[in-house]
Length: 382
Ligand SMILES: *Cc1c(COP(=O)(O)O)cnc(C)c1O
Image (cartoon, rainbow, N blue to C red; front, side):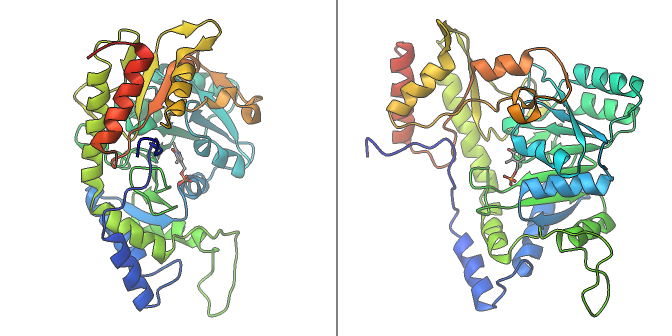
């Protein structure tokens, strides 16, 4: 067992997933619709505990694409987007032919900076183009500065797409993430807090918007006995098999959040004595983070090399996976020519940061191995 791989975040089944899948087989609901899809949507709605409406789709990326289409973003429009994020937050802006305008992070949550967000809006309006949407992300499960970001959005009447792909189970002032945006999205990819093997959800404010989203996600078929189409549609609905996995996963979501939060505690204790390491956690009591991944910043360099990269290699040699933070979008070759508002906050976080193994299925032995590996790197004793 000494050499088995410790993953950053791997699927963790609760046990009941297989039963929902078996039921789908027994009833021959092997399709992108069925009782598991409807049931999974209800489970999510009950969990989020707000007046929201859920459309289960094939991925979080598809949900973001649908959100931008529902807002009516058109080719040549501009969309503001948190620069420090996974590429899937930004790609859908290009799917609809719009222009991403990237915004830097603030230091506390590493999410979109309210200060630079407002500067970007004012600058774009001055240049004659008011942005059509704001994509804000709860990175690694940490809620962004919700009050500030939404009050700016309101001030300029710009809809917010809340990318809650990493934040199911997180909340802010007691309200669950996934319920703050004009549109919100979730992801159930393999490494997220719960998984359907691959899948996502679009969260809307009313039933008509949900129906519109499902219409677009099922090839935009008109109400006719034959196949008639008056607009372009997509094949984005979730499969009834995937939704079965999702139903089983919803039963263990709170346990998984609890276990991931314990991993964050474990790292806080582990790094207590290491001055150059900062473990990220909630800046204040209003925030509740699912700690999908625990993030550290290592403030030390070895010549040209940042110590986060050295630590990553050190862990890998011991068969422990860790990962650099998301490389900001304004530093990505594919987005090099789009505007950016900010300074070097996300860039510095990217250089110093590292995501550590955070899965809800890590064992005590795994934790001992991780602790030993980290201690041998920093050479401190407990
Ligand atoms: C995973 C992720 C997505 C995309 O979700 P998929 O289901 O993989 O398409 C979008 N945004 C963020 C921040 C993510 O982490």
